[in-house]
Image (cartoon, rainbow over all chains, first blue to last red):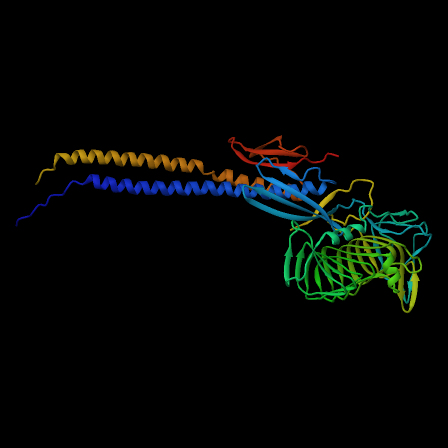
Length: 414
Length: 106
Protein backbone atom coordinates (compact mmCIF):
# COMPACT_ATOMS: atom_id res chain seq x y z
CA UNK A 1 0.00 0.00 0.00
CA UNK A 2 1.43 3.32 -0.97
CA UNK A 3 0.43 6.66 0.61
CA UNK A 4 0.78 9.92 -1.18
CA UNK A 5 1.92 12.63 1.22
CA UNK A 6 0.70 16.09 0.21
CA UNK A 7 2.47 19.28 1.24
CA UNK A 8 0.65 21.68 3.60
CA UNK A 9 1.38 25.19 2.53
CA UNK A 10 2.57 27.48 5.36
CA UNK A 11 0.05 30.38 5.30
CA UNK A 12 0.27 31.72 8.85
CA UNK A 13 0.26 35.30 7.60
CA UNK A 14 -3.18 34.76 6.05
CA UNK A 15 -4.51 33.46 9.35
CA UNK A 16 -2.86 36.34 11.24
CA UNK A 17 -4.44 38.93 8.96
CA UNK A 18 -7.82 37.24 9.35
CA UNK A 19 -7.33 37.27 13.12
CA UNK A 20 -6.27 40.92 12.96
CA UNK A 21 -9.47 41.79 11.10
CA UNK A 22 -11.62 39.81 13.52
CA UNK A 23 -10.04 41.36 16.60
CA UNK A 24 -10.27 44.78 14.95
CA UNK A 25 -13.97 44.30 14.38
CA UNK A 26 -14.49 43.11 17.93
CA UNK A 27 -12.54 46.08 19.32
CA UNK A 28 -14.52 48.48 17.15
CA UNK A 29 -17.72 46.91 18.46
CA UNK A 30 -16.61 47.25 22.07
CA UNK A 31 -15.53 50.85 21.48
CA UNK A 32 -18.83 51.63 19.75
CA UNK A 33 -20.91 50.13 22.57
CA UNK A 34 -18.79 51.89 25.16
CA UNK A 35 -19.14 55.24 23.39
CA UNK A 36 -22.91 54.80 22.99
CA UNK A 37 -23.15 53.89 26.65
CA UNK A 38 -21.24 57.00 27.73
CA UNK A 39 -23.27 59.18 25.41
CA UNK A 40 -26.56 57.74 26.69
CA UNK A 41 -25.42 58.23 30.29
CA UNK A 42 -24.63 61.87 29.58
CA UNK A 43 -27.97 62.33 27.83
CA UNK A 44 -29.99 60.69 30.60
CA UNK A 45 -28.16 62.72 33.24
CA UNK A 46 -28.77 65.88 31.24
CA UNK A 47 -32.45 65.04 30.95
CA UNK A 48 -32.65 64.17 34.66
CA UNK A 49 -30.94 67.45 35.62
CA UNK A 50 -33.32 69.38 33.39
CA UNK A 51 -36.34 67.74 35.04
CA UNK A 52 -34.98 68.43 38.54
CA UNK A 53 -34.10 72.03 37.66
CA UNK A 54 -37.47 72.63 36.03
CA UNK A 55 -39.40 71.51 39.10
CA UNK A 56 -36.96 73.33 41.41
CA UNK A 57 -37.59 76.54 39.47
CA UNK A 58 -41.36 76.08 39.75
CA UNK A 59 -40.97 75.71 43.51
CA UNK A 60 -38.71 78.75 43.69
CA UNK A 61 -41.05 80.86 41.59
CA UNK A 62 -44.08 79.76 43.64
CA UNK A 63 -42.74 81.40 46.77
CA UNK A 64 -41.55 84.62 45.16
CA UNK A 65 -44.10 87.40 45.59
CA UNK A 66 -42.49 89.26 42.73
CA UNK A 67 -40.10 87.48 40.43
CA UNK A 68 -36.99 89.66 40.82
CA UNK A 69 -35.39 87.65 38.09
CA UNK A 70 -37.21 85.48 35.60
CA UNK A 71 -34.05 83.76 34.44
CA UNK A 72 -32.25 81.12 36.46
CA UNK A 73 -28.85 79.82 35.39
CA UNK A 74 -28.31 76.41 36.96
CA UNK A 75 -25.11 74.79 38.12
CA UNK A 76 -25.52 72.01 35.53
CA UNK A 77 -25.57 74.56 32.69
CA UNK A 78 -29.35 74.59 32.21
CA UNK A 79 -31.23 77.87 31.96
CA UNK A 80 -34.80 78.26 33.18
CA UNK A 81 -37.12 81.07 32.19
CA UNK A 82 -40.03 81.68 34.57
CA UNK A 83 -43.31 83.47 34.03
CA UNK A 84 -46.18 83.88 36.47
CA UNK A 85 -49.74 85.09 36.13
CA UNK A 86 -53.05 85.04 37.97
CA UNK A 87 -55.36 82.32 36.68
CA UNK A 88 -58.66 82.41 38.49
CA UNK A 89 -58.40 81.59 42.17
CA UNK A 90 -54.85 80.41 41.77
CA UNK A 91 -51.65 81.67 40.19
CA UNK A 92 -50.09 79.76 37.35
CA UNK A 93 -46.35 79.60 36.94
CA UNK A 94 -44.56 78.31 33.86
CA UNK A 95 -40.94 77.19 33.72
CA UNK A 96 -39.06 76.57 30.46
CA UNK A 97 -35.76 74.79 31.03
CA UNK A 98 -33.37 74.86 28.11
CA UNK A 99 -30.07 73.07 27.50
CA UNK A 100 -28.35 72.94 24.12
CA UNK A 101 -31.49 72.82 22.04
CA UNK A 102 -33.43 70.61 24.44
CA UNK A 103 -36.41 72.08 26.22
CA UNK A 104 -38.71 71.07 29.07
CA UNK A 105 -41.83 73.15 29.68
CA UNK A 106 -44.00 72.64 32.75
CA UNK A 107 -46.72 74.75 34.30
CA UNK A 108 -48.13 74.59 37.81
CA UNK A 109 -50.99 76.04 39.77
CA UNK A 110 -49.94 77.58 43.05
CA UNK A 111 -52.00 78.47 46.09
CA UNK A 112 -51.67 79.12 49.81
CA UNK A 113 -50.87 76.42 52.31
CA UNK A 114 -53.52 76.62 55.03
CA UNK A 115 -52.39 77.28 58.59
CA UNK A 116 -52.32 74.37 61.00
CA UNK A 117 -55.29 75.73 63.00
CA UNK A 118 -57.64 75.86 60.04
CA UNK A 119 -60.98 77.50 60.80
CA UNK A 120 -64.01 75.28 60.18
CA UNK A 121 -66.67 77.99 60.50
CA UNK A 122 -66.49 81.78 60.75
CA UNK A 123 -69.69 83.71 61.41
CA UNK A 124 -69.45 87.45 62.12
CA UNK A 125 -70.72 88.63 65.48
CA UNK A 126 -74.30 89.69 64.69
CA UNK A 127 -75.38 88.59 68.17
CA UNK A 128 -77.31 85.70 66.67
CA UNK A 129 -77.54 82.13 67.90
CA UNK A 130 -76.96 79.28 65.46
CA UNK A 131 -79.45 76.46 65.91
CA UNK A 132 -78.19 73.00 65.08
CA UNK A 133 -80.76 70.44 63.96
CA UNK A 134 -80.77 66.82 62.86
CA UNK A 135 -77.42 65.19 62.12
CA UNK A 136 -75.48 68.45 61.93
CA UNK A 137 -71.82 68.11 62.91
CA UNK A 138 -69.19 70.86 63.15
CA UNK A 139 -65.59 69.70 63.57
CA UNK A 140 -62.70 72.11 64.07
CA UNK A 141 -62.15 75.66 65.30
CA UNK A 142 -65.16 77.96 65.05
CA UNK A 143 -65.60 81.72 65.37
CA UNK A 144 -69.13 82.82 66.26
CA UNK A 145 -70.96 85.51 68.19
CA UNK A 146 -70.98 85.26 71.98
CA UNK A 147 -74.34 83.50 71.76
CA UNK A 148 -72.74 80.56 69.98
CA UNK A 149 -74.72 77.41 69.19
CA UNK A 150 -77.97 75.96 70.50
CA UNK A 151 -79.74 72.67 70.03
CA UNK A 152 -82.57 73.11 67.57
CA UNK A 153 -85.55 71.06 66.48
CA UNK A 154 -86.98 71.14 62.99
CA UNK A 155 -89.84 68.93 61.83
CA UNK A 156 -89.08 66.01 64.10
CA UNK A 157 -85.31 66.24 63.67
CA UNK A 158 -83.71 67.28 66.96
CA UNK A 159 -79.96 67.75 67.15
CA UNK A 160 -78.39 64.32 67.55
CA UNK A 161 -74.83 65.26 68.59
CA UNK A 162 -73.48 64.96 72.12
CA UNK A 163 -71.49 68.21 71.76
CA UNK A 164 -72.47 71.41 70.00
CA UNK A 165 -69.17 71.71 68.20
CA UNK A 166 -66.22 69.34 68.12
CA UNK A 167 -63.37 71.81 68.54
CA UNK A 168 -62.53 75.18 70.08
CA UNK A 169 -64.86 78.15 69.81
CA UNK A 170 -63.75 81.80 69.74
CA UNK A 171 -65.56 85.12 69.56
CA UNK A 172 -65.72 86.49 66.03
CA UNK A 173 -65.42 90.11 64.84
CA UNK A 174 -68.31 92.20 63.51
CA UNK A 175 -67.41 91.38 59.93
CA UNK A 176 -65.84 88.64 57.89
CA UNK A 177 -62.06 88.66 57.48
CA UNK A 178 -61.23 90.87 54.48
CA UNK A 179 -60.57 89.48 51.06
CA UNK A 180 -57.12 89.63 49.53
CA UNK A 181 -56.58 93.06 47.97
CA UNK A 182 -54.83 91.49 45.00
CA UNK A 183 -58.09 89.71 44.22
CA UNK A 184 -59.62 92.56 42.30
CA UNK A 185 -62.27 92.09 39.68
CA UNK A 186 -60.07 94.05 37.29
CA UNK A 187 -57.71 91.10 36.84
CA UNK A 188 -60.41 89.22 34.92
CA UNK A 189 -61.21 92.25 32.75
CA UNK A 190 -57.51 92.72 32.00
CA UNK A 191 -57.10 89.03 31.21
CA UNK A 192 -60.09 89.11 28.83
CA UNK A 193 -58.91 92.30 27.14
CA UNK A 194 -55.39 91.01 26.61
CA UNK A 195 -56.43 87.57 25.34
CA UNK A 196 -56.25 86.61 21.68
CA UNK A 197 -59.74 86.12 20.30
CA UNK A 198 -60.44 82.87 18.46
CA UNK A 199 -62.89 82.92 15.56
CA UNK A 200 -63.46 79.19 15.77
CA UNK A 201 -62.13 76.33 17.83
CA UNK A 202 -61.62 72.68 17.00
CA UNK A 203 -63.41 70.13 19.16
CA UNK A 204 -60.32 68.95 21.03
CA UNK A 205 -57.67 71.56 21.83
CA UNK A 206 -54.93 72.12 24.37
CA UNK A 207 -53.64 75.63 25.03
CA UNK A 208 -50.21 76.01 26.58
CA UNK A 209 -49.57 78.55 29.33
CA UNK A 210 -46.36 79.57 27.60
CA UNK A 211 -48.44 81.07 24.80
CA UNK A 212 -50.77 84.03 24.82
CA UNK A 213 -54.15 83.41 26.50
CA UNK A 214 -56.89 82.55 24.00
CA UNK A 215 -60.52 83.53 24.34
CA UNK A 216 -63.69 82.28 22.70
CA UNK A 217 -66.40 84.93 22.93
CA UNK A 218 -70.12 84.84 22.32
CA UNK A 219 -72.39 87.87 22.29
CA UNK A 220 -75.20 85.89 23.94
CA UNK A 221 -75.35 82.14 24.59
CA UNK A 222 -72.45 79.70 24.55
CA UNK A 223 -72.57 75.94 24.91
CA UNK A 224 -69.36 74.00 25.58
CA UNK A 225 -69.25 70.45 24.35
CA UNK A 226 -65.67 69.50 23.54
CA UNK A 227 -62.35 68.53 25.05
CA UNK A 228 -60.40 71.65 26.03
CA UNK A 229 -57.56 72.23 28.42
CA UNK A 230 -55.19 74.97 29.53
CA UNK A 231 -54.81 78.61 28.72
CA UNK A 232 -58.24 79.44 27.30
CA UNK A 233 -61.20 81.53 28.45
CA UNK A 234 -64.79 80.85 27.36
CA UNK A 235 -66.71 84.08 27.64
CA UNK A 236 -70.45 84.56 27.05
CA UNK A 237 -72.23 87.89 27.43
CA UNK A 238 -75.48 86.25 28.53
CA UNK A 239 -75.29 82.63 29.62
CA UNK A 240 -72.98 79.68 29.27
CA UNK A 241 -73.84 75.99 29.48
CA UNK A 242 -71.26 73.28 30.04
CA UNK A 243 -72.67 70.06 28.61
CA UNK A 244 -72.29 66.83 30.55
CA UNK A 245 -70.15 65.33 27.77
CA UNK A 246 -67.65 68.21 27.77
CA UNK A 247 -64.13 67.56 29.03
CA UNK A 248 -62.53 70.64 30.54
CA UNK A 249 -59.24 70.93 32.36
CA UNK A 250 -57.84 74.11 33.95
CA UNK A 251 -59.88 76.45 31.74
CA UNK A 252 -61.69 79.64 32.79
CA UNK A 253 -65.33 80.25 32.00
CA UNK A 254 -66.90 83.67 32.37
CA UNK A 255 -70.56 84.61 31.96
CA UNK A 256 -73.34 86.24 33.98
CA UNK A 257 -75.13 82.87 34.22
CA UNK A 258 -73.26 79.57 34.14
CA UNK A 259 -74.88 76.13 34.23
CA UNK A 260 -73.07 72.82 34.50
CA UNK A 261 -75.25 70.05 33.11
CA UNK A 262 -75.80 66.98 35.30
CA UNK A 263 -72.95 64.47 35.32
CA UNK A 264 -70.27 66.85 34.03
CA UNK A 265 -66.76 66.17 35.35
CA UNK A 266 -63.71 68.41 34.99
CA UNK A 267 -61.40 70.98 36.56
CA UNK A 268 -62.85 74.42 35.86
CA UNK A 269 -62.76 77.90 37.32
CA UNK A 270 -66.08 79.63 36.74
CA UNK A 271 -66.74 83.36 37.14
CA UNK A 272 -70.30 84.64 37.10
CA UNK A 273 -72.09 87.82 38.08
CA UNK A 274 -75.56 86.38 38.60
CA UNK A 275 -75.89 82.59 38.86
CA UNK A 276 -73.89 79.40 38.86
CA UNK A 277 -75.84 76.17 38.89
CA UNK A 278 -74.24 72.77 39.27
CA UNK A 279 -76.86 70.19 38.41
CA UNK A 280 -77.04 66.70 39.92
CA UNK A 281 -73.77 64.74 40.11
CA UNK A 282 -71.59 67.48 38.67
CA UNK A 283 -68.04 66.81 39.81
CA UNK A 284 -65.65 69.76 39.70
CA UNK A 285 -62.29 68.26 40.45
CA UNK A 286 -59.32 69.83 42.23
CA UNK A 287 -58.34 72.56 41.55
CA UNK A 288 -61.69 74.09 40.64
CA UNK A 289 -63.38 77.21 41.90
CA UNK A 290 -66.73 78.91 41.56
CA UNK A 291 -66.70 82.68 41.90
CA UNK A 292 -69.81 84.82 41.94
CA UNK A 293 -69.15 88.53 42.05
CA UNK A 294 -72.45 90.36 41.99
CA UNK A 295 -71.75 93.50 40.03
CA UNK A 296 -73.73 96.76 39.92
CA UNK A 297 -74.75 95.85 36.36
CA UNK A 298 -75.99 92.49 37.55
CA UNK A 299 -78.05 94.16 40.29
CA UNK A 300 -79.72 96.48 37.82
CA UNK A 301 -80.35 93.94 35.04
CA UNK A 302 -81.31 90.84 37.04
CA UNK A 303 -84.30 90.98 39.29
CA UNK A 304 -83.60 87.57 40.73
CA UNK A 305 -81.24 86.93 43.57
CA UNK A 306 -77.66 86.12 42.67
CA UNK A 307 -76.68 82.66 43.82
CA UNK A 308 -74.56 79.58 43.48
CA UNK A 309 -76.47 76.34 43.71
CA UNK A 310 -75.02 72.87 44.11
CA UNK A 311 -77.61 70.18 43.63
CA UNK A 312 -77.73 66.62 44.90
CA UNK A 313 -74.53 64.65 44.44
CA UNK A 314 -72.55 67.62 43.11
CA UNK A 315 -69.05 68.34 44.39
CA UNK A 316 -66.57 71.19 44.07
CA UNK A 317 -63.00 70.63 45.21
CA UNK A 318 -61.03 73.88 45.48
CA UNK A 319 -63.05 76.88 46.54
CA UNK A 320 -66.30 78.80 46.32
CA UNK A 321 -66.43 82.59 46.61
CA UNK A 322 -69.50 84.83 46.68
CA UNK A 323 -69.13 88.57 46.95
CA UNK A 324 -71.04 91.69 46.03
CA UNK A 325 -69.88 95.15 45.04
CA UNK A 326 -72.87 96.60 46.91
CA UNK A 327 -74.11 94.07 49.45
CA UNK A 328 -77.88 94.18 49.82
CA UNK A 329 -78.95 92.86 53.21
CA UNK A 330 -82.49 92.25 52.02
CA UNK A 331 -81.43 90.38 48.96
CA UNK A 332 -77.94 89.02 49.63
CA UNK A 333 -75.91 86.69 47.45
CA UNK A 334 -76.76 83.14 48.35
CA UNK A 335 -74.99 79.78 48.40
CA UNK A 336 -77.23 76.70 48.33
CA UNK A 337 -75.58 73.37 49.01
CA UNK A 338 -78.24 70.69 48.75
CA UNK A 339 -76.83 67.24 49.60
CA UNK A 340 -73.65 68.25 47.83
CA UNK A 341 -70.02 68.51 48.85
CA UNK A 342 -67.51 71.35 48.83
CA UNK A 343 -63.87 70.68 49.62
CA UNK A 344 -61.61 73.66 50.37
CA UNK A 345 -62.38 77.29 51.10
CA UNK A 346 -65.88 78.74 51.04
CA UNK A 347 -66.20 82.51 51.49
CA UNK A 348 -69.66 84.03 51.25
CA UNK A 349 -70.49 87.68 51.91
CA UNK A 350 -74.18 86.73 51.86
CA UNK A 351 -76.28 83.84 53.08
CA UNK A 352 -75.40 80.16 53.10
CA UNK A 353 -77.98 77.42 53.03
CA UNK A 354 -76.03 74.31 53.88
CA UNK A 355 -77.77 70.97 53.63
CA UNK A 356 -74.66 69.13 52.58
CA UNK A 357 -71.03 68.89 53.59
CA UNK A 358 -68.09 71.27 53.62
CA UNK A 359 -64.65 69.77 54.20
CA UNK A 360 -62.46 72.79 54.83
CA UNK A 361 -63.49 76.29 55.91
CA UNK A 362 -66.76 78.14 55.69
CA UNK A 363 -66.72 81.93 56.09
CA UNK A 364 -70.24 83.25 55.76
CA UNK A 365 -72.11 86.36 56.88
CA UNK A 366 -75.29 84.46 57.64
CA UNK A 367 -76.77 80.99 57.73
CA UNK A 368 -80.29 80.34 56.55
CA UNK A 369 -82.53 77.42 55.77
CA UNK A 370 -85.58 76.93 53.58
CA UNK A 371 -87.45 73.91 54.85
CA UNK A 372 -91.03 72.74 54.62
CA UNK A 373 -92.23 75.97 53.11
CA UNK A 374 -90.65 78.04 55.88
CA UNK A 375 -87.51 80.15 56.00
CA UNK A 376 -85.30 79.93 59.06
CA UNK A 377 -82.41 82.23 59.81
CA UNK A 378 -79.33 80.91 61.62
CA UNK A 379 -80.27 77.24 61.27
CA UNK A 380 -78.28 74.23 60.12
CA UNK A 381 -80.07 70.97 59.31
CA UNK A 382 -78.12 67.79 58.56
CA UNK A 383 -75.11 69.91 57.64
CA UNK A 384 -71.52 68.80 58.11
CA UNK A 385 -68.57 71.15 58.38
CA UNK A 386 -65.13 69.78 59.11
CA UNK A 387 -61.71 71.34 58.83
CA UNK A 388 -60.12 68.26 60.38
CA UNK A 389 -60.95 66.00 57.45
CA UNK A 390 -59.14 68.24 54.98
CA UNK A 391 -55.83 66.66 53.91
CA UNK A 392 -52.77 68.57 55.10
CA UNK A 393 -51.48 68.72 51.54
CA UNK A 394 -54.60 70.56 50.37
CA UNK A 395 -53.77 73.98 48.94
CA UNK A 396 -56.41 76.72 49.18
CA UNK A 397 -57.16 79.50 46.72
CA UNK A 398 -55.35 82.66 47.77
CA UNK A 399 -58.48 84.67 48.65
CA UNK A 400 -58.11 85.71 52.28
CA UNK A 401 -56.06 88.71 53.37
CA UNK A 402 -53.29 87.62 55.68
CA UNK A 403 -50.88 89.67 57.76
CA UNK A 404 -48.31 86.96 57.38
CA UNK A 405 -46.91 86.18 53.98
CA UNK A 406 -48.76 82.99 53.10
CA UNK A 407 -46.67 79.99 52.34
CA UNK A 408 -47.23 79.12 48.68
CA UNK A 409 -47.27 75.59 47.39
CA UNK A 410 -47.69 73.87 44.05
CA UNK A 411 -51.26 72.66 43.65
CA UNK A 412 -50.81 70.66 40.49
CA UNK A 413 -48.14 70.40 37.84
CA UNK A 414 -48.90 69.69 34.20
CA UNK B 1 8.02 14.08 3.86
CA UNK B 2 8.62 17.47 2.27
CA UNK B 3 10.55 20.24 3.83
CA UNK B 4 8.96 23.38 5.12
CA UNK B 5 10.28 26.42 3.43
CA UNK B 6 12.47 28.64 5.56
CA UNK B 7 10.42 31.72 4.68
CA UNK B 8 7.46 30.15 6.50
CA UNK B 9 9.24 30.38 9.81
CA UNK B 10 9.63 34.12 9.34
CA UNK B 11 6.01 34.25 8.32
CA UNK B 12 4.95 32.37 11.46
CA UNK B 13 7.03 34.70 13.65
CA UNK B 14 5.54 37.79 12.05
CA UNK B 15 2.06 36.30 12.23
CA UNK B 16 2.46 35.47 15.90
CA UNK B 17 3.71 38.97 16.59
CA UNK B 18 0.70 40.44 14.82
CA UNK B 19 -1.63 38.17 16.81
CA UNK B 20 0.10 39.10 20.08
CA UNK B 21 -0.20 42.83 19.30
CA UNK B 22 -3.86 42.33 18.36
CA UNK B 23 -4.53 40.49 21.57
CA UNK B 24 -2.76 43.17 23.61
CA UNK B 25 -4.61 46.03 21.95
CA UNK B 26 -7.92 44.19 22.33
CA UNK B 27 -7.27 43.62 26.03
CA UNK B 28 -6.43 47.29 26.57
CA UNK B 29 -9.52 48.44 24.66
CA UNK B 30 -11.75 46.08 26.58
CA UNK B 31 -10.27 47.04 29.95
CA UNK B 32 -10.58 50.78 29.20
CA UNK B 33 -14.16 50.45 28.03
CA UNK B 34 -15.07 48.55 31.18
CA UNK B 35 -13.35 51.24 33.29
CA UNK B 36 -15.30 54.03 31.57
CA UNK B 37 -18.66 52.41 32.28
CA UNK B 38 -20.02 53.31 35.69
CA UNK B 39 -19.92 50.45 38.10
CA UNK B 40 -23.17 48.92 39.16
CA UNK B 41 -22.86 49.95 42.84
CA UNK B 42 -22.38 53.62 41.91
CA UNK B 43 -25.30 53.43 39.49
CA UNK B 44 -27.51 51.98 42.23
CA UNK B 45 -26.45 54.75 44.62
CA UNK B 46 -27.07 57.40 41.98
CA UNK B 47 -30.63 56.11 41.51
CA UNK B 48 -31.21 56.17 45.28
CA UNK B 49 -29.88 59.74 45.47
CA UNK B 50 -32.14 60.86 42.65
CA UNK B 51 -35.07 59.34 44.53
CA UNK B 52 -34.10 61.27 47.67
CA UNK B 53 -33.77 64.53 45.72
CA UNK B 54 -37.24 64.02 44.19
CA UNK B 55 -38.66 63.27 47.63
CA UNK B 56 -37.11 66.49 48.94
CA UNK B 57 -38.57 68.48 46.05
CA UNK B 58 -42.04 66.98 46.40
CA UNK B 59 -42.47 66.65 50.15
CA UNK B 60 -39.74 68.85 51.66
CA UNK B 61 -38.71 65.99 53.93
CA UNK B 62 -34.99 66.42 53.40
CA UNK B 63 -32.81 63.56 54.53
CA UNK B 64 -29.65 63.15 52.51
CA UNK B 65 -27.67 61.32 55.19
CA UNK B 66 -26.22 57.92 54.29
CA UNK B 67 -23.24 55.72 55.14
CA UNK B 68 -22.64 55.07 51.48
CA UNK B 69 -21.91 58.62 50.39
CA UNK B 70 -20.87 62.02 51.69
CA UNK B 71 -22.87 65.19 51.01
CA UNK B 72 -21.03 68.46 50.41
CA UNK B 73 -22.71 71.81 50.04
CA UNK B 74 -21.14 74.26 47.60
CA UNK B 75 -22.09 77.68 46.25
CA UNK B 76 -24.47 77.95 43.34
CA UNK B 77 -24.25 80.30 40.38
CA UNK B 78 -27.48 81.82 41.66
CA UNK B 79 -27.82 83.67 44.98
CA UNK B 80 -29.51 82.17 48.04
CA UNK B 81 -31.74 80.27 48.51
CA UNK B 82 -30.00 78.25 45.78
CA UNK B 83 -27.19 75.92 46.87
CA UNK B 84 -25.57 72.94 45.19
CA UNK B 85 -25.17 69.63 46.97
CA UNK B 86 -22.59 67.10 45.81
CA UNK B 87 -22.98 63.43 46.59
CA UNK B 88 -19.59 61.74 46.75
CA UNK B 89 -19.18 58.00 47.11
CA UNK B 90 -16.84 56.35 49.62
CA UNK B 91 -14.52 55.58 46.70
CA UNK B 92 -14.37 59.36 46.13
CA UNK B 93 -16.27 59.46 42.84
CA UNK B 94 -18.92 62.10 42.21
CA UNK B 95 -22.26 60.33 42.12
CA UNK B 96 -24.56 63.29 41.54
CA UNK B 97 -24.73 67.02 42.05
CA UNK B 98 -27.94 68.91 42.34
CA UNK B 99 -29.07 72.45 42.92
CA UNK B 100 -31.58 72.69 45.76
CA UNK B 101 -33.34 75.42 47.70
CA UNK B 102 -32.07 76.11 51.19
CA UNK B 103 -34.67 75.43 53.81
CA UNK B 104 -36.13 78.47 55.54
CA UNK B 105 -35.09 78.08 59.16
CA UNK B 106 -37.77 80.46 60.38
